[in-house]
Length: 85
Length: 199
Image (cartoon, rainbow over all chains, first blue to last red):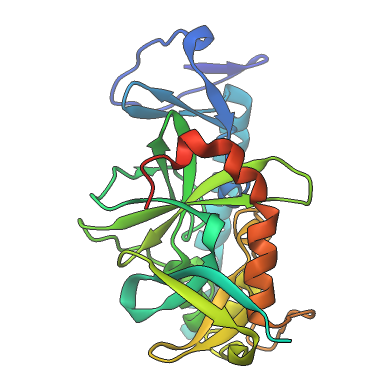
């Protein structure tokens, strides 16, 4: 479970572990990779792997937008089905 | 008086060609370096590589060009073979700015080229994405029109979905711009340690 202020939300994960952020050298997401509302703000290497860094608030904003977009898509599909009948 | 520029001919995936200035190409990683995918990124900039302790974005110019030629970035796919080449390039986002490093997917090892003003030609009309990513163009005897890449623009995040009717203004003659691009990254000489072992 993640918390943004008093709001709680769940994130489905295969596994969860902790990292010591003080020992990570994070760099901002390169400009050419950034899109509006992108939930990942920075990248950090951990041995040979790459970590995408975000925060609960950005994840929640992203999930909300994705959910709204999915709702809009479903409504459009329903409207199209009705028109075709 | 005719001017000439020294650069690299880039052979991209799928028979596409482009060029960069001599000092803009820093290194070639020929052994399919590991590409790390970053979710929710544009189709032409989905990956990064870890190189010399740095995280570098990898741009797949072909994904950008083909997306523009077909139906816009939303439909772009980014098929990568298991044997890809990655070129590490250097650029300055603005005059006086620090030199930045980034990477591009290549199809083959780049070739050294000399280009003169007499070879300058118009950018290919199609795909329209060339207008976004190139500053100039020259005629190559074997490859035809070869666009010279605007690396600061490509890696700045200012690329838009190519518009078939749009032409950027201020496109100038090619060879002089290879020279200019090289001057912009002249400070790269200070990064000799990075270039050591380069091509």
